[in-house]
Image 1 (cartoon, helix red, strand yellow):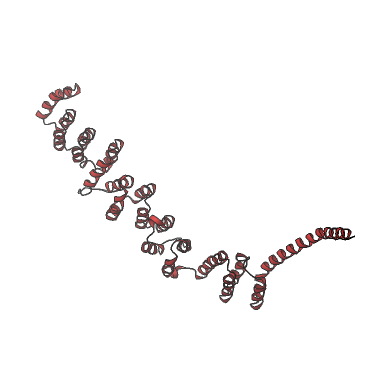
Image 2 (tube, rainbow, N blue to C red):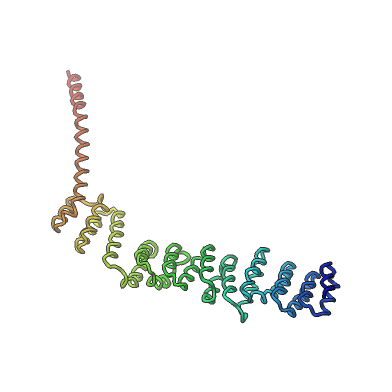
Length: 344
């Protein structure tokens, strides 16, 4: 064996091959065979040696020789060792052999000794290079991946639907809802949204969800409210919708609609909403109508800021007119005098 080692060190590989074969030193034989380019024989030698170090040496040599089928045969004996997986993945990735790496990991999932690292790393590779395959992988194996690690990969790859799926499985319901609202085109699904919104910890997300539906899914709002109704602060919800109604009335430029909204607030005894609406719809409202409505319902105190503003604007307009008259009057007298002189 020592002679074989000397031949190996002197790069006399044919001689080393004969010597190692004679003494059944299959580890050193496999190393020698890869130098001779005899990859299939090297894999056979590695199988007989059955050591992780030998499998790695032959695998990496096969990768360098672009013998990927043989490299995969070796790699399947390496990936089952969690502490060896990273080095193997890096060897493939550093050389740009992503497709071959994915194929190997896919083949490895059915191994009896398959472990979490394999499922996790394959999910991350899918997120980078085959995003169309990631969702199916997660649906099948989500319980076998390191979810926080895969979450980061999905976020970096902007795979929003997959991110929501993982947040849901990881019971991070608040983040799932926020992601769906931030990326509705890719991530929002009606049934999924209604299921998850009932599990969130932050109740503020109920009201953000209502606003989201008002803006993006108004025809489905009633379905959402049915789900949320047992959990909402109803007075706050009414105020929430009141604000939206006021904004709508203001943008409509419809005086009749604005005044009807004022009346509705009084019917519902929403005096604060009445006062807020006076300013939101200020330009649309007729002061005499507001005055009569406030007097009839005995809420002049809630209306007084509005009337102060109306009076200020009125006096400002009157003041500007008086100022104009004070400047214009002397000129008018001069014009009249000139006319009289012309007549004479």
